[in-house]
Image 1: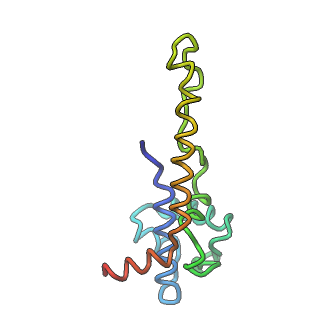
Image 2: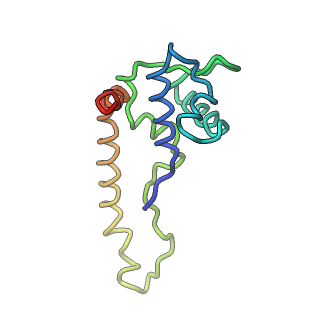
Image 3: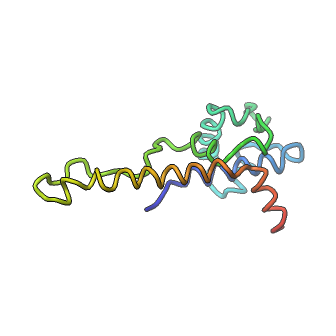
Length: 140
């Protein structure tokens, strides 16, 4: 299974803003240099983060800034800001009802997949940008 790159890119952006705020103008071009993607992707992601209330963006060369302390932004906040679909697992909608597996797959697998999703969301809620900044500092 593969998730989109939206959340890792958004987290990278937020970490750069937190780390470099006040030292550099965290413009889309600056952030694109760190993430190594086109500035258009950064601007789109910043728009999603702004809509979620995680950043403020000054037009032009003003750059972006966090609206909350890094200790108050969790990975779950980031996930919810940029992922369009929280349904991580999608069933084939019309399995064969004449097959015992097809007839029962939703019932036997659905609850387990929902539980896995809940565990992931709980884990994401435990990690803050401040935690990640601390780990970056240790590795630097």
